[in-house]
Amino acid sequence: MWGQPPRLSCQSAARQPQSHLSQLVLILFLLTLPASAATWTVRVQPVKLFNGAPILFQVKSPAKLDSLTGSWLTHRLTFTYDASTKTWFALGGVSFETEPGKYTLELTGQSATSKAPLAFSHAFLVARANYPKIKVELSVEKKFTEPTPEQLKQIDEDQKTKQEYLNRVTPDREWDGKFTAPADASISDVYGSQRIFNGKAQRPHYGLDFRVPTGTPVAAMNSGTVLVARFLYFEGNCVFLDHGQGLLTLYFHMSELKVKEGDTVKRGQILGLSGGTGRATGPHLHVAVRWQGAYLDPARLLQLPLP
Ligand SMILES: [Zn+2]
Image (cartoon, rainbow, N blue to C red; front, side):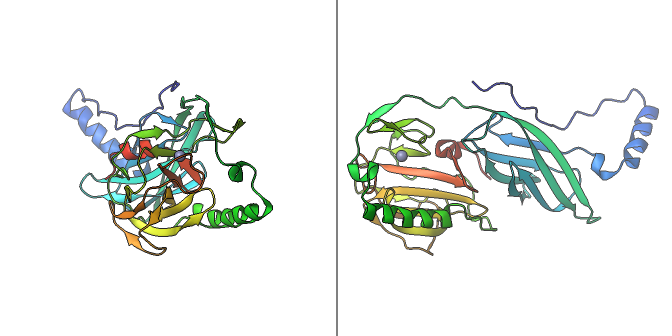
């Protein structure tokens, strides 16, 4: 259940003046208004926001801008100008843990002509998504549920690796255009579902699982830089791709890696071959989308019509 749709600002249609005189008065009035009183347009996709959603923000400003940044749920958004549509765009999201409510997007631009700052803010409603609550009894090896002290040491080391890379925000955008699926396969588990391992409730499933046999090529969902390409205890052979501005895609449980840390890759480039390494009940591909410290729904990112 989505709750109320968020209010969206849009360019209000100019009223038709009754006469030439009133038209003239209106024009004179508009000429005396400061630039900041002109209209901003802010569009979001998806139109109704919910926890776990990646968001495409599209902004039209009242005056030509040199730059545009935003603040959203304590995160920073850096906008890019798309000259073909005269629109500024940025990618962001809402974490799984965000409570339903009203949240404000704050925009700050710099006028291209006067160099003066231009600001605008707009509140959006965030609803709670209805993620599947089906609890599936899965059995995994004891080494994952009751690791030995030695295995715990490895897990702790991996935790440091993940801390170091998973919250990384590099300033430049490397992704370009739509994100594409990492494999042509059916989905075996969706984002947000609740899982139980050996009778114990785990955190929600923060990724999207593709049903692929071992040895299936795994493709980069967009262009980026390889941050991590190594074996981790739970993730198995995995790749973390940095797409810039805090957006990462993660690929787990591979049997073989085909890239190394520091490589730059293009969308569709093969990162490795799928498998069942790490904590996996069988061969499959788990992909996750991380934005500035929050896991977002990969299936929704694949649906976004990105410029
Ligand atoms: Zn998974």
